[in-house]
Image 1: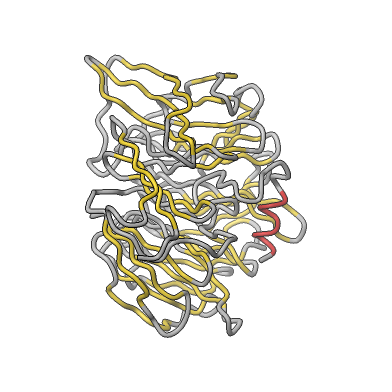
Image 2: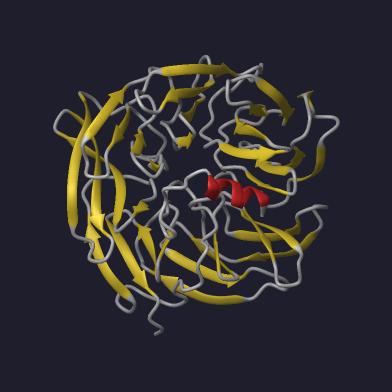
Length: 411
């Protein structure tokens, strides 16, 4: 709870129901309102559907009454990278800006897109990131304030969403060579510092979005990469690191609670680690509280929930669709169920429910507690790898060809 309060306090200009970054205001998959829909299909409870050209697996964000999205469109002989705004109530396009144009379309993994990172809104400006293909800052009306390109060599494309804290714009650049964490001056786009990874990882590439936390009155940037999860201060100094042998291509965003962070080690066989955040130096032998390799996600980010009985529960969805509920403090397995099909989207928690959308377009809603109880199964019948977002009275789901607004009208 302390981390959630810290995260919300970091953005005093946000409206109460803005959804300003990947996984929402806390960055950890929680919606603070209880009126999300339970049941829907392709016709019932759909308030609007807006078809979009191109291919992008970024989530939208909500800024006041607008939804902000990035997009990548294959054009003759190249690639156009853009940002656009939709009216949240109607789905109509409000504005659209092409930010970067490239003469060719770099090769990426078949499950990636050229617009996978989710935008960030700090209460004043919008920040969008396309990995090494470009980074930009815009006003809420779509005016470009600055745009830059930072050249590194990603493998399979880019995935880290940008994160703003104070005057810093953070993103990971874990490519084939010289992996690092970038910190830019958010007002100008100039590099303030780069934290090079202190690691001898054989496979250096990863895709993880960092998380800023507060512990004992001090800020830490938690940044998982290949072989290690790293903690840095706001000046780029490494505070501690913890090893996960052979881990690479790390995707799930970490979560934090009760002075521990939870991180997946990535490919080939992911292991989930719970690590205390009060260490210094290499804390591998001293601060790992528990770990498990059973049904751990390669891609989906987990969620931490305190249930009605006061228990701190950890939920995660493996790529196979198997969902696990564990005791967050001890790692003890409380239940494990096959819930969905193949999964890439992250978990969303709201009103005592957890929402999980699989790659076929089905969203499963289950109780955020013990025992497992499936509440609903909803099918849009359209492929998606994007994580849904919560908006007042509804959900927004991005699929391969469209953006859908689902209302809370029961069917």
